[in-house]
Image (tube, rainbow, N blue to C red; front, side):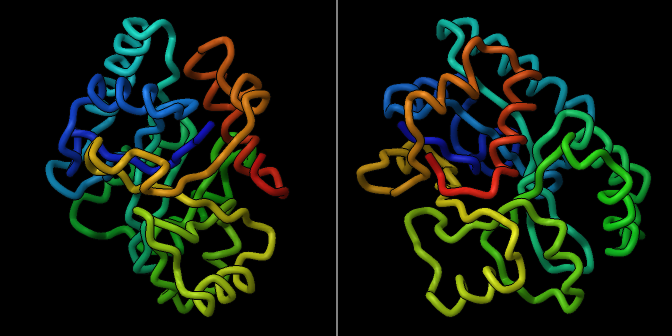
Length: 227
């Protein structure tokens, strides 16, 4: 089975509804649909909109016999020239509230790091996505639980992967789709994280959005090979 941690719907710059995406991901043997729409690429996602996404995910899941649909965010971190995948219901809500309170581009990297360090480490996870590694503050990378080594079928160069290993020795590598369309979901064409059926059951059975998210966060933080 497969587990992609990076996908976009019509709520940001994706091309498909949550329902369409869920049907295709399920048909392609993905253990779940994990949505990570941008926090503000087009119209900013507010807490109200994010809750609407959660509600829609629950409705679609019910229509597909409990197929798991989890909602995170892809966030832009000011001062780090980086984007990250953020998971955790409370963390996502807090982040959107922080953005709303700093609507005049007043947010800075030190404040983001202080916020992340103030939270329970087990309540959220953070994955560096399509990394540029341009942040001069190496302590930023120490906050990551994972990093992408592949995005949309493209494997990063060896020297880039080696740098990520040095900067984030305790983080976990992931192969994600960064899917903006269901045309780019087939794992035979676009490689993705592979997991066993046992792991999929442990993470997503029974379907319970909050419980599934908590278990997913724990799995992301595990320092071992994907299984």
